[in-house]
Image 1 (cartoon, rainbow, N blue to C red):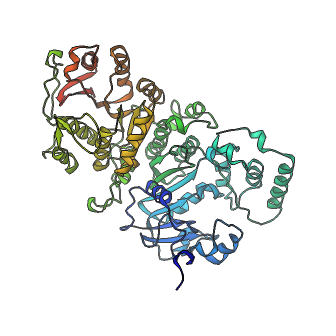
Image 2: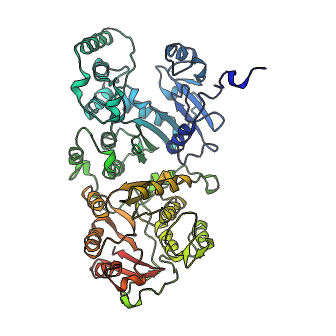
Image 3: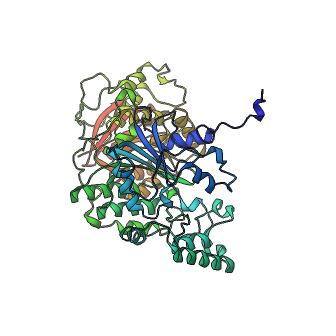
Amino acid sequence: MADASTAPPDYSEGMPRNEWDLARRNRYLAGLDLKRLSGLEIGALNRPAVRKSESDVLYVDHADVDVLRANYSHDAGVPPDSILPVDVIWGGKQLRDCFPDGRTFDYVVASHVIEHVPNVIGWLNELASVLKPGGLLYLAIPDRRRTFDIYRRTSSMAEFVNAYVTKAKRPSPQQIFDQHVHFAKDESAVIKDEHNVGAALSGPRLKEGLGMAQIVADSDVYVDCHCWVFTPASLLEIFAGFSAMGVLPFRLGSFTPPWQGEHEMFMVLERADLPEEADRVAAMGAFREALRALPPEALANDYPSFAAVLANFSGDFARGPAPDAPPPPPVPLQQRAPASAMTPTGWWTDRIRNRLMPPSPQPLARTPSSVPSVAQAGVIAAWQPIYAYTTPFVDEGHRAITEIKTLGGLLRADIDGYLRPADALAIYEAAHFAQGDIIEFGSAWGLSTSFLCEAAINARRGRRVYSVEIDPNFQQITRKHIVERRLEACHAVLPGEASAMAASMISRGKKMGFAFVDFDPGLDANRAFVAQLPQLMRKGSLIIFHDFNDARNRDPKVCSVHQAVSEFCARPDVEYLGVAGCCAVTRLKP
């Protein structure tokens, strides 16, 4: 009997997965109900994102397994036996012709494929032809700034259009030359974010590149390369253009930029026919909104500059809606997993609809009132519903807050923090009904963050939660707790000072649907910060201030929240809706 240490590797489902592979896969395919749905994976090779044991999936490639194994026989990183059998050979025919019975699918997965495709617009339309209405396309795309493409210029709209109208079947001589000449052999350049293009050029490389380009031009040989080069901003710009031109049969579902220096970004698209101009404008607006919402780390060292990208979206570009334009009415998804079948991150599919088309505002249960005197600070108020609904709680997650043990009136959960039950119930409810993405200023250990994320996921309205936190230790602790609870798909930490981060988001036209403010920088700084909020928030959105009702407010030098909120509520466009726990509930008037 062979010793376990000498037994051959098990390649029955491709290369074995390690911890990083699993974490990456969970982020990439968050919310995809694999057990219930059927789909395709393009170019799985030996590292499928979806295994046969996990879903009814077919593997699609340009050739059969024998050809693939021969092609990769000299690649030490791809053991021939690990390459999986191919179910569908796409080759040179139309993808829909590979299924003569007219079969269509719930999802398509394509990881690091789009950059190799000679005609991206044509390819996307072929994928759409085998997807059911509302079917999902999951793309993983490399970020030029973190790969061997670091020295290359991002691909332009004109290049994509040229490949489309000429029906490109192979990488062009220009693309072959560009990759060969600008290939970053020095991995340290990628790590250090160095962009010294001249360092990549040399006489021998130029001559070799010219020779390869000439061979491709003079023959029918197919030379694989990265035909296209993207950054987060350039990718969203390109797809906004596709929508505006009416050549993209998809809506944006979600976009996830590279996380903490990783080399790839994830995009989910929903199959949709967009026959009307208004539909195409709305679809383009989703890419524009995602572009404006990119965090600073996703914009560093971008070519062209982010300012130039935004300039393309200014004014009435393709008659896109203004940031404050009322959203169009909801369009129901054709394909949705039942609540019992959805994963903890099953909110993702509903994000497709609500990112662009939020549901109608929930009516309020409270009426505006006057701000109480600071002399009443310290009298803790019980939670009362903010919105009108017929059940005692908005959902089971909301009710479960009442079962968490307390000590001295504060929740004693497995995350440290200073929230009372009424505080947590209020912010969960507000997050559940948020009319846009959610932002908290000050996350500390992440207790409030966990309630906000859980509410966003359970509501299935597709909301993201942004945590603005200046302390690096709290940033790491918050993220750790969110990942441990498998809530990371809807969450991002924004490191920085609250006023500066708010100003940055305002300058990019970002509008939030709910804000939870849980920090006190002192009265003057608090006043300046609070004055920014009406520009950051959507009309009709809630802003909840923690520690408003804390007894410490009786001395503004100790705690200035009550005074800052009182002045904020004196504005004609702000309403005070009362107290929950020690929080003030306020709203921007619709």
